[in-house]
Length: 546
Image 1 (tube, helix red, strand yellow):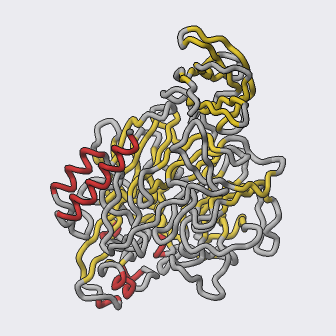
Image 2 (cartoon, rainbow, N blue to C red):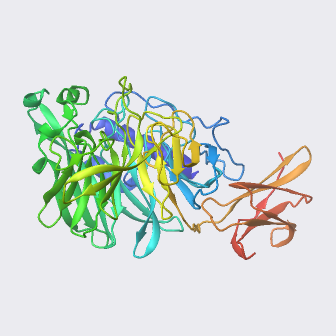
Image 3 (cartoon, rainbow, N blue to C red):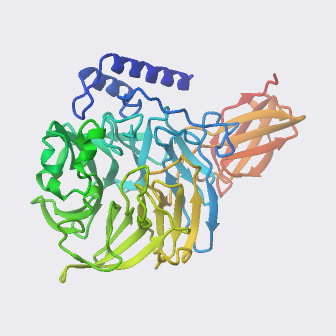
């Protein structure tokens, strides 16, 4: 019933905001829209398209999609693990599958935790194909591990063209969940900006660094764009998570010349006259608490910014680079720039503009590690990580440096995520040092992919279902998000208040099928941990054959 109510509320929302005509530009949504978002929660219903095009519903009946007897409303995508060698890191894989609006994705969009075999561990589906999660990862808040992600609607032609492709539509925000999967906080950008999909970074000070966007009216004719145009402005915001106070604000329009962009201003004509000149897509910490890193995708530049003065300390790459860049160290359209110990920079080098067709001769995408010399102001190639086989990637992607020296790479607008042993490989030796590789179904993407250790202890109970097939009664047990369950006990009886344990079996995958020689009709399952202690009990159900 809850699912029905939520879908009804979503439909009602869309009817209301369509009837009252939300203006198309950021920061201009009316009071009714804000009230509906406040009631139903940020990012819980899609922002309306201005094209009238509807995204197709996800494909949920397919060999590429999971279905479960005990969790009939969960349909995550299936991934295929193609490489899994010794040396692969432990821990779980975190992805947030979604599909571009013209294509039907396999499985529901949402946040998904997987094991190394590709089995789902936790899945939080979203109610609409026009909603998505991004930057889904484990972070630390008040010394405790939490899950964080952005949630909302992505501007993705042809359905959503209110803003440049890859931008956040209004009404989106960031979520923080504890290890019981309760939502403990939602965070939104301030000062009339929209919460951007690209980055939500928790700091050791228990603040959040985030990117935000806002359209600003501008005459773009000096740059080859329309006279009655707009610039997609980006701002870095730092928010105190205890008080919601805005601690730091840095506006790209005040510090970065528009002429530095590699994105033609003429592209604004296809997106409501909005020029995506900057497309900032990553914020990172550095070796100084006063400095942060910023990546400008459409600027081909990584900036080090001094927060107290707001000054740009240096620029790496682009039209005004402060560094001489060595052979193999050039990059373009990059994502996920990070500052590592020893003045090392990691990034995902897309080498390609965000487009549906990749120009001939475009270099292959790869993970790129650069060594900076801050005295001689040079940047040299340290390591590279290519996919086997080599691929070209139009957008998105990330490079995560793991504690054991391995690199975990999400391949953005492609179907892959991989793990590599240092020192990586080259474009000519892409099979070298590949430890792990997995493939998502066609039409499915994840903005970033991460690997983390994670302990999930759901606040809700395990799930149970019972079926009879060819005379055999089978009990199905699952506990969405439980990382500590290692075995299941099944209890049965003729009275719901007097059940007897009839079987104990090891947990297998997300859902364990447990054949039993008992007609019940009442059944219950209990989850056991590695110490054979009961850590959760399902409700008791009565098995009634139809």
